[in-house]
Length: 585
Image (cartoon, helix red, strand yellow):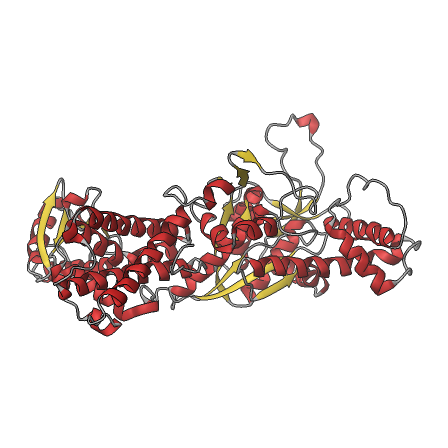
């Protein structure tokens, strides 16, 4: 149960009672009334801004609302203290027996602890992520977007959203023609031709040697000396299929899955670009015109020319955007329009794009066109993932010989494991740069966040194993632990751990609403910290150990707390796609 939501509902109920009593005016909008933790935990467990946000509309002083509201909130049996602070904030402290109930709720929910129906009424959600050009294996930079997108989709599913994971295959345009030419060179090499140095402009990676050998097996010497017009399309198509197969294998190695792969070339062939632009034209949003000179350029540097433009400025963009080049071919933006129109027409109400930071300049235009195509009925949220700096003991890692120009995702996963990669990629906000240092992410210390969290789960498992071994007469089955007398847990560190466990339902809902899976990693580290603190306290004070000889009920209560902590760690890790470990070797 999200106890913040429970108390918020309570506050709104009491506000309605104040309206009925005539203490505050009727008809007030409670939409901005909120519940949050106080900045200083000494002030209580939760705080509400109700009086502050309602004072203006009610034409009253905040304290004139806060004082009677506080009096009504004091009447609830589980509330220990209610205080009006400053100009009108209300701080509440819950009674000690409030927190054990939340721990029992966690144990009763099991693997569904924190699961909610938050997104049930929000419509279908499309999360498009990775979408790497099929011109080579995935590099470490792709790992961040892959993990972010997959974890976000999992988080949304956990909170009741209907989610589709999608990969947009950029298999049209100049880059795949370059792939075809590069593959043909390796094809000739596989046939025995001396190719010398890879010409500038082609892909140099050795990964294309396998593609060349595959082409020989398929076509024999058919295209060895044929003109490019004869071999470019079949060679390109074969190379794209091989690269997409490798990309899928790399994603599978990371535990990343997609439900749908949509081809850019397919959209063009099916006439969906023409159809999407016709819809915009029918709305009066496509026109022939001349753009203003770019900012920072002198007028004599500007060559005005007639272009086919989308009225992006009507939807918040800085300038109108070209959709067709002077030679009649589509711009990249035109195919992006068709792709997003296709997603809208498939019935998605929320679109989430996970892009690299280098695509930041495209965000406004895509927001504009989604608003135009959907009559502002579909929301688009673009998440930009910043670069990953790969290091080893503070020194940059050398490029992969196989890839030629970068370190492959597979190199990294095979060195440290998928769970480490997934967790570390979520230890910073997506829009903040991330340092990935092999030495740090593999050391067994507090500085390694994945070890710190996994160690907490392993310690929980160890405590429960030891209890079964050392106290065989003590019933520590899940049912028995749910009935433990948790009122025996009175130490401040025990209470802090219970409160952290109880905060999980709110944490997961907030992360889902903000589309920020890194919040789950932050919460896991916080929970691990509380557990490690309690563990260390037991090492120092015999009376705070988890297993107390001669006091089976206190032991049972503490084991219930340990089990609920392990449950919280396990559920949170699984939302991120990380497997919790029972013991560390």
